[in-house]
Length: 126
Image (tube, rainbow, N blue to C red; front, side, top):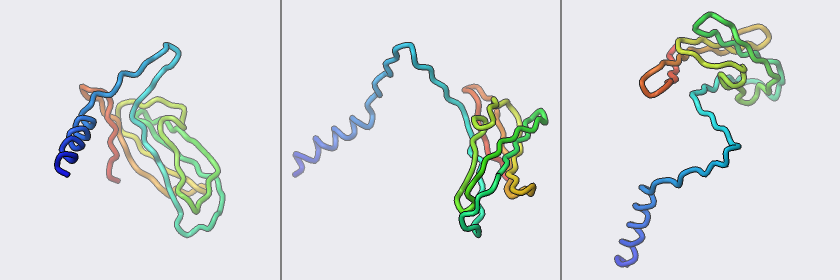
């Protein structure tokens, strides 16, 4: 049993430290990566009600960006920033809120910070 266990353990350890195979690119594929945040809300007492939710993000320059969609309030719903807002992120603090029937039902803060290795996303406490 020990004879089988040691080689199997060595194979598992070497596989864990194996260098991934380099991606083969044919020139037609483009790639993108960057920090994104999911903003969401949920009403725990609603039973399948559908309504319009509007998410508003205020950028570091004071610009209001909004994205609206019809949601099922009995489930978690949300959006991604900056993708759903057709925007780019910039360094600095942001605030966001979710409005349903003209009333803010959820809100929060986050920020993008530039550092030596790139851009960092931080969710801030209210």
